[in-house]
Amino acid sequence: MERPVLIETSARHLHVDRKTLDILFGEGYELTPVKDLSQPGQFACAERVAVQCEKGGFPSVSILGPLRGATQVELSKTDARTAGIDIPIRESGDIAQSGKCLLTGPKGSVELATGVIAAKRHIHATPEDAKRYGLQDRQIVSVKVQTPERSLVFCDVVVRVSDKFRLAMHIDTDEANACGFTPGLIGEIIP
Ligand SMILES: [Zn+2]
Image 1: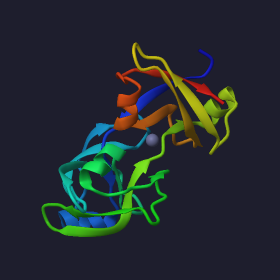
Image 2 (image 1 turned 60 degrees about the vertical axis):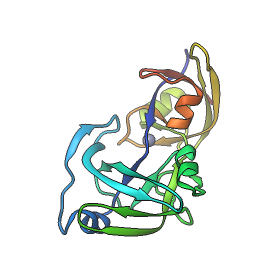
Image 3 (image 1 turned 135 degrees about the vertical axis):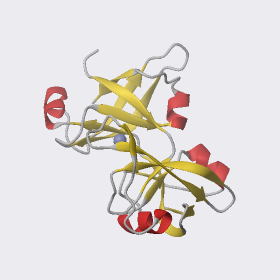
Image 4 (image 1 turned 135 degrees about the horizontal axis):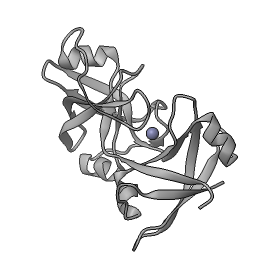
């Protein structure tokens, strides 16, 4: 395989900003890391919140830390259908005119006027990875996935390059199910 990449799945989760955390969990509250994620400095937290949308919701969605500049909820398209909302496919952080919801934690609720998205599938790469693979930041590539019964090629995969990253591709649970994902799955980047 010429350009292998480890594929990882992101289940529904949210990132919170300081203000949202203060309202949901109390002034000055600090997140409790329970598990490091593959990207350096990113972690899953013990804290969970209810995400309520127009026609449905999820009672216990995990927060990923650290704090962000803006609160953002990432759902799959299947989740969005369940919750009765329409959400755009966006890169993380691009939340203008996305879905709305109500977040509820132990100390309060926050009405999110925008911020619910389905994450655009993406590859995190370091500058060294990018150089080795001949890739550029924001380049759109395809990734070929071979599994026993659901092999496929993911097109429209955006490459993000930063020295803060570690090489990995992130897909959501819909995409994972579509390709017969199992942990440790390696895809092949096709520029
Ligand atoms: Zn990612």
